[in-house]
Image (cartoon, rainbow, N blue to C red; front, side, top):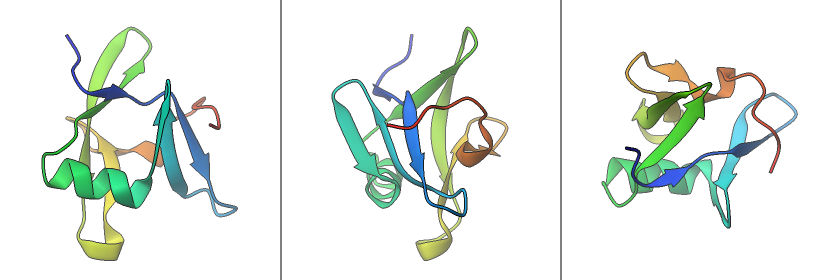
Length: 84
């Protein structure tokens, strides 16, 4: 069973880079999400079809980005994720 918050939407900048993620009654900048995941203050997950995947962080500093675990697919490559 999934724990933490479920990502159901994301906002992208004009270059296609996710700048904000959200779900039912919550929203965070990607930077906030990265810091909270990296410091284990927050767990995020996403459902793709009928499967649930954890969200992880790859990269360091300003190059850090969100990925779908365990295959490390960048979150910005998920198709069909609506805008918040």
